[in-house]
Length: 203
Length: 203
Image 1 (cartoon, rainbow over the protein chains, first blue to last red):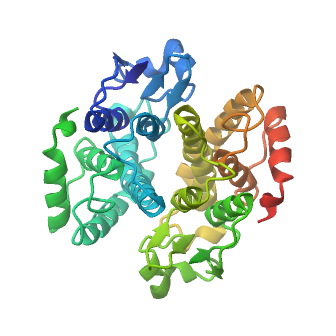
Image 2: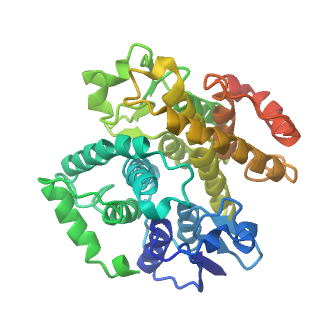
Image 3: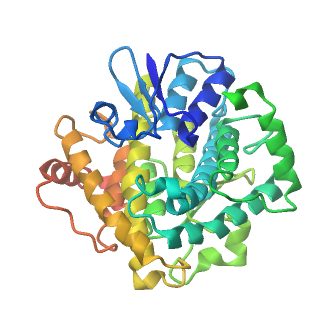
């Protein structure tokens, strides 16, 4: 088994944090996004969508999409449970994982990809108006999250889950996207400090 | 239990097809997107993100996000299995569900939401350049799918799965988005005819 890793990019970090929470160690192979190695012929043969991370199993099966890779490990080694247990909790974790990914992470990435000068070659065409349209979405979702976190410790409930991993990676990606945390979100700040203090956060 | 349904919109259709494949019947309550009922105070109390569908459980728990709702029913009633069985198949179904949703469905929806005159009030601001940037992505992903479907019957493997539901709904949404199926994609056309012929497709 081998995990093609993409360093500081958000999606590879999601999988590394997940593996750290599980206590699973997988051999990594670095793919340098900075020098566009993920667009190389060699890596395109592994993932035609040219995205990281990618997990190659011992039988040659290739798994891409961070959450699909995480689910693979969750099925192999259920404990500690990170996708919920029982129908209702499974659905709530999935709901929050998706809400955070589709409303917060995607909006922050849109700002980064469509405004940041370093993305000129990777995001063609850059659409600055699309980045601007996403800025208020980031603020609106963080405000919603703050109201939710008034009543519970973690994103999807009282237990840490994959939804916290996505949210942590998204919030930390606000810095390269040059987005500041809006003032007054005390619950988000408290949650962020707690999940950042876990050893997995530095994975 | 009650499912707030949104008629012809893509996400409500995903859940209705899923339920039809499972043979599960849930009381529906129509929410009219055309008259912006999903933006009403009453529905915002159910889903602050103002999106459909939403499932209200008997204990009052509210589940949103189509795939989270589908996973709830998969956990309640596993057969017929639509999210895969065993670690590798679960991961492959998740990978393809996400690939189709994030690369095909999202691109088609971007074209629709940012170009269609009917979306002027719902998508503020419309960013036509973002719609145009997504058109080649739709074609590129359909071409990739055509190569994949040369070797297998369904999107994620030899069995029908939730990835087929997402792909069917996405391809059918090309029509309102005024996107034509590119010529020469015989495998996509064959797959589309097969999944469209299932009774669930009309749900």
